[in-house]
Length: 137
Image 1: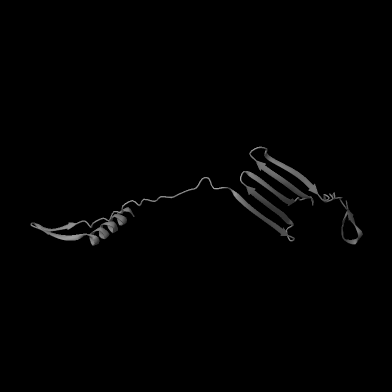
Image 2: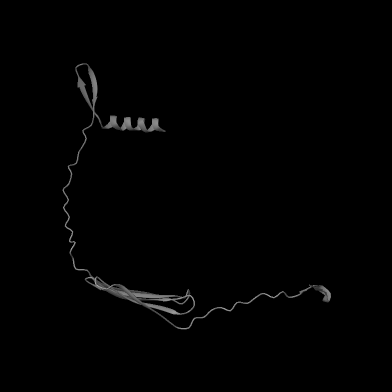
């Protein structure tokens, strides 16, 4: 495979080379190579832009039982937000949080609703009925 690549490269080089005449015969000159000059790219990045944003989103899927939402707002170094998640036991967890450079991150977590747990049913061995009224224990 390597020999095929070398042969193909040689053929391509010959087709792009020029034929020159010398005093003693014909020679092959290599094709000129184009060299691009480096481009001077200057980008300006502002590292001191005032951070300010606000967003919210939510999911409410009755088919899968997936319920959640979140909202957050930032103004400078102060972030305030909240999110809600439906827990597997049927309760709703709500978290309200704040963060700033003086108090750090603080969160208040509450749960609402009543938890519902499935009842565990233990299997009891029942006699296996055989044909004609016979029982197998």
